[in-house]
Length: 156
Ligand code: FES
Ligand code: FES
Image (tube, rainbow, N blue to C red; front, side, top):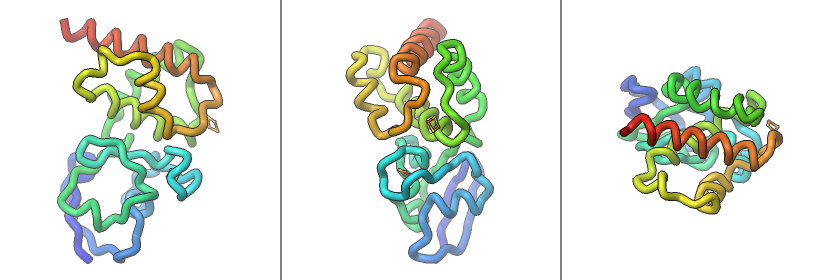
């Protein structure tokens, strides 16, 4: 089947098998930030943005991405580095396997319309699909709070 996808700002047309997962297609296209930890929608490592919304690429067929915009960490380098700095400052960086999916979820979260008014509970619930938090939930929350505060300050 032929699909046309805007991947990290580049329009790509490709022939894919009907049962090819979006995760596998993205890896084929060189997006090696996208990791697979479970293939059963439990770990969040394979999170990418589809039309701006966080999506588990292990749970979506590549054909479903036809005519959509897909973004991986490769397409959000500047924002990822910025948020990564807050994670590092809080001693909360994840390993290279877990980091991409977690960062992709946070970068999607910051686009939610009312995120600056969210409670800690709302933030935790948004991130509940990211299973591994080896470096600690409290450090992640501090980093996200400081990141959102800095962004809000920058908007003034
Ligand atoms: S690999 Fe997709 S949720 Fe675990
Ligand atoms: S195994 Fe990667 S941070 Fe937990």
